[in-house]
Length: 175
DNA sequence: TAGGCCATCTGGTCCT
DNA sequence: AGGACCAGATGGCCTA
Image (cartoon, rainbow, N blue to C red; front, side, top):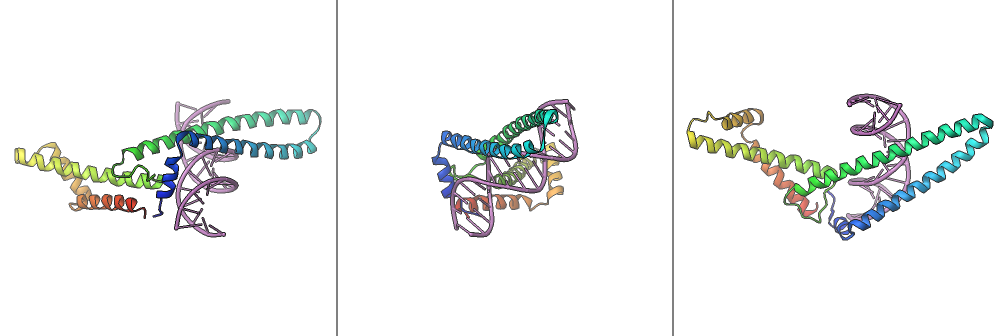
């Protein structure tokens, strides 16, 4: 695992505004490069086309170009939403230092193991509680527990906890 | 400088 | 038909 502390610190130091500025800058650069590209291809097309055919094509090209730009914008918005969701997920995963920004793949992997460890913990606790209360183990909680054991095996609980805490540890180490 | 991560563009496919 | 979703390509930034 790659060390992230420096980059993460740098990212946090730069506030949201700076980030937005950067994004805008990137966007402007992209637009400029697209315009350059367009001018190049435009010149090429101009040399090939003539008369009304040329006018029609230009109109069609402009229309197509406009649609493309619109769908690019929508795609950008969609990706921003996705990134917001990633950020929200990062914020609910405990025991990770705030400045240690997780990558997307790290976020997903850690979240998966966290959910697994929580699930097995809850099932263990509810099963133990119900068994001591009614002594039969016939309650729905312990049925659920038995089902979980059939699916996962008895040692899975400790495995999940170990896996999760190891992962947390490795992120803390920045390894 | 190589490699990882990310944002964006793009064309294809699916869905409403 | 038009928007949403997806995956590949590309290029920029950052770190070791």
